[in-house]
View 1 (cartoon, one colour):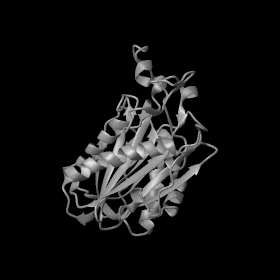
View 2 (tube, rainbow, N blue to C red):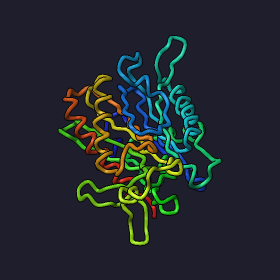
View 3 (cartoon, rainbow, N blue to C red):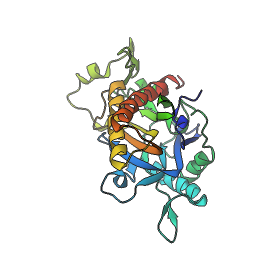
Length: 306
């Protein structure tokens, strides 16, 4: 049984990574086109093609989303996804060519592995070649290869994290799925129990980031190496306003599982994709988008290596 985002019809996911350098990228393909949306709440985002996803802008559909390591350097990898899609005739028709629309977001993973090796167009192209509708590989793969959480006490006390994915069938044939790259400043909380399952390590186990923050009058740029990025997707029929609302509501799932969330040192960004023609209320879709995004975050942590 596939309970990851690829259970949503029209969605494929592929990973590629450099394990030695501890970085990689993950591509979410919707080659037939999907109505896109975005909600960006962190104070330190690294993104591409987010403005066109908002209402009042012309382009309605996107053809893929890239989630990547490498900080802002990793945005160059988007060209590999565009090349793959162009070769297959997928993109926005401008008369003389088809231009693939590929929004992207990055995590900061330069402080682990090798800072001089980042995802590039060739790696992203390989991720496209690896894309499949099979259940998504989770943990330290793709964009989650160098993901970590719990950095309030420095990288020496952080824990490995990774990519997680989840999906729910709300009613027969109606799916909402999510994929998340978990690279937060704060702790990851199990929303079912309220307990910390990953975060900053201390001599006594796991430190509580909120309690540690009490000892700091202000955080510094030393902590500016974080973000959670991801995608929520559905085969419900949403317009651009609905897709943006879905992304906005999915942020509630992030806030339930990450403490603190949306800081000035996180670039928290969630994309939304609507691939289908099934009629459904956007409030229903958004509510379950929050649920599956929270589950994807928890799974990304639990699937990571120690």
